[in-house]
Picture 1 (tube, rainbow, N blue to C red):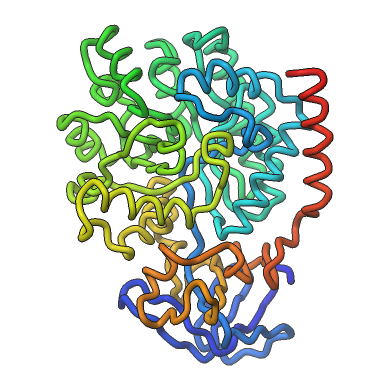
Picture 2 (spheres, rainbow, N blue to C red):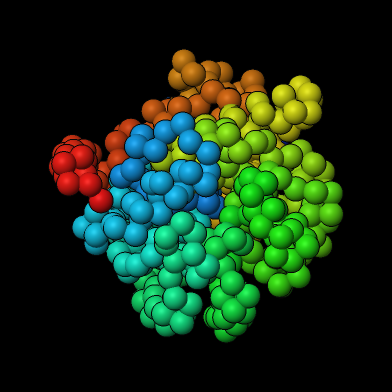
Length: 434
C-alpha cells in the first residue's frame, strides 16, 4: 500500500483523552490525514476488526550511526565505552557502512512501532543519515556531532562544524521527512566558543538542540572543575536550556538542576536500558513528572542497549521507578504518554501527531487484539501496551498515510540483505580493524 486513500473498517482505537477504547465504524486515510466516518468510496479497504489502533512511538534520543557496533562494546562504563570503542568506530565509518547502520537501525525502529525520532549523528557524512531517514518514511531530526574539546584523541573544528551544519540544514530543507538538529555531544566535549557559535546557529534557523547531560558524575565533576557549577547549572548559565532543548539521561542531578530544567521548559529523554547497561544509574523520572518537567523516552544507541524497541523502554521505565519510589509510582498511562505524545512537544509536532483523532496525521499502529501477550486489551489497554506488548503484536505501521510494516513484516527493507551486508562488514572489522 502507498499513501493513497484507504478505508479502515470496524476500527477500535485507543482514546487517550477518554482513557478508554473507542469504536469508529470507518476511519479513512485521505493522503496523510485521518478522517472519521467519511462516506466517500475508496479503492482500498482494510478490515481492522482484529486490531487495536494506537498512536505510534516517538523516540527522542537515538544514534542510527551506531547500530553496526551492537554487541561489540560490552560490560563497560560510559567513558571507557566512548574512548575505547564508540568514538573510534564513529570516526572511521565510511559512507557505505554508515548507510548500512542507518538502514538496520531504521528497520528495528519501524518493526517495533517508532515513526518519529530525534537522532544524533557522527562526525561526518550527515547527508547519508538525512537520505536514509527520508527514504525510510519515518520523521527524523538528526545532526552531526560537535566535539570541539578533545575527548580521548577525538575532536572536530568548530568553524568546520558550523559551515558543514549550514550545508546540511539546506540539504534537509529539500526533504519532507528529515529535519536538521544541532548536536553538541556533551558538555565536557564543547568549549565556550563552540557553545556560542552553536546557539547563534540555533537562533538563526530555529533549530532543536540535542545533547547528553549528567549521565554520570564525570560531567558534574568537569563542570565543577571548570565553572564551579553542576552540568545542568552550567548549561543554564550558557543559555543552552530552552523549550527546544532535548537532554538525554539527566541521572546525576542536584535539586537545583530540576528547577533549571522546569523553568527553562527543557525536555529530558529517559533511556533506562542504556543507563542500566552502562551502569550509569536510575534517573528520577517520578520527581521530574511531579515537577511537570517534560520527559520522553528513547533507546539511545544499539551498542549501549542492544535494542531499539520503545516497548522495552516503557516497561523498564515503569519497573525502575517502582523500585525507586514504590509500587504506586508511574502509571502505565503516564509512561505511554512519555513514549508518544511527550516526545512530540520539543519537535513542535504535538498539534498534528500523537493522538487518534479526526484531522490528525495518519501515523498509527494496528496491534493484534487477540495476542497471548496482551489479551484482553479491554481490561487495561495502557498496562497491556506498556508491560506486555511485543513487536510481533504490531501488524501494521503507518506513517504519513504510508504503510511501512504490513501483516507483521517491514516492507521497505530486505531483512536478509541487511543481515548479509552486516556479516561482511563484521568480517572486515575482525580481520582488518577500524
